[in-house]
Amino acid sequence: MHLAIFGATGGVGRHLVSQAPAEGHRVTAFSRDAARLETPDPDLDVVEGDVLDGTAVRQAIEGRDAVVCALGMPLLNGDGLRAAGTDTIIRAMQASDVRRLVCPSGLGAGDSRDLLPFHYRYLIFPLVMRRLHADYENQERLVMASGLDWTLVRPSNFTDGERTGRYRRGFSAAEPAPKLKVSRADVADFMLRQICDLTYLHRAPALSY
Image (tube, rainbow, N blue to C red; front, side, top):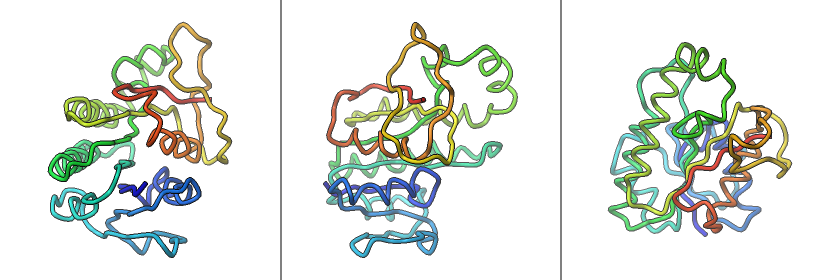
């Protein structure tokens, strides 16, 4: 399939861009700064632009089979770019009749809040991660109301570990507590698996070791 990947130079996005060709996908990588694509595949299509620019975003999406949104922002940033950029992507997908969207959020968003230990729910999220959490919640509302064939992925804390393919997904509060960490490479692995696997269609599985 031909994928449009947004946030292609970010922590998860870089792994998406490197892993997708090995899974048989062609990639269009969207980035504000194409020079940051470290080892571009010779067959990689690159669109440089601002994710808030609807024309540039639509250029990257038209004619593609699916969209993977991996936008990110610094922890303390309050601009809400993740949600705003996702809104631009959704509008371009609707206009281009591209249906499949896979998008990471964060563990603790929506009904996954109950999966977090006490100190995350009542200390870290309200105090340290307040802006990030609000951005995740706004992003999720936009995706869920989009009418697209979406899957949201809620990973726990990122690590720089290797791609293992061994992680827990879609677990509930009734199961043993997660380790609250997962590598960016494994998040990319799981997201790419969702492109053709509709097990989590219109669902938001948690992801952790």
